Length: 411
View 1 (tube, rainbow, N blue to C red):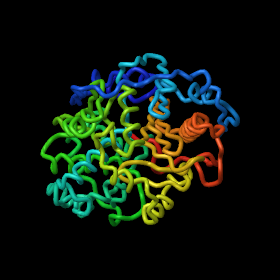
View 2: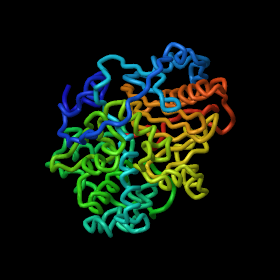
View 3: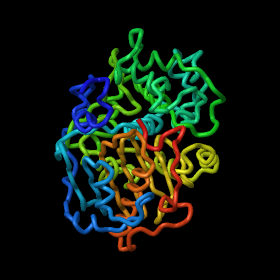
View 4: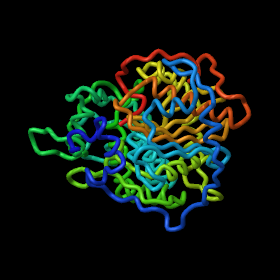
């Protein structure tokens, strides 16, 4: 296993659990006062038997979905209590796992805190915080455009194309070798990106948007991202374990997908989202920030409907670095990462589900949709609603997979 192949199967089954041994990282320290201990009621046998209508394989069970989708670990929380917790392969309860683009949602929450404190304004431009961005494809973009991935920067997220910007950026940030020249580092590379259209247009998934957003946050706060995540999330929510985030050749954090964390701590983050940003009697993420993200905005919805992601999450939208989709019981909030990383928050059934995976391929529409269906079915079952109840226009409805131009489970 090397830097060249660590993202590829079967090596990713080891590397996603040991990334700090492959790539330099910054530590995100755990809380000095751990949060409330989880109450655990193991209902795994019962929950694995819950029925699910899978996209390609038809009728099945939650257990079959977990087995078929290269699950490394899963935690399901209902009404604040862990009801399913499983570790497979090399995973253990204290094992960190790469989050991939679930990291983006952490950065989005850091942004919300900086906005609340008055350090950051979403209607200001990137240039206001990072003057060096002038002349690039990000010049003139608002912070709001970064949050909702509606910039006009030219950036392809085609993972199987080695010439796509997402893969070139990885080489500059140290995730892959193969450059003819010395690596620039993430920020210097972002300055080379050009424009392909106006800002504020249709939703287009660009990991680079989050990297620029992280840069803006660091400038606004005068601190680096590992410290910001610790200050605004990890410490106040009572994380039990250190997390970490990879950094490039000049020590810059990789905001778009570099965080690794223990799954129980990520479940704490999911519970935080369910509880309107509160941990006990303490506000950790501004409730208004989360509420605005999950509120259906016609402009945001139209931007998503015009994108290649609509067939996968019909009726959905993307805001503040979160995905949303209509589910069988109501709107479902998602944090997604390629190779199968997921946090699902189902407010209507008071359910949080977290899954770590090592899919062989970065994207797999059937794995994604089957997992969403499995978790929403669990929420309905746990709430006494009778398991899955597909309806037209929801994530339980039929979806026809195709090869997307932008991903629905990101790097």
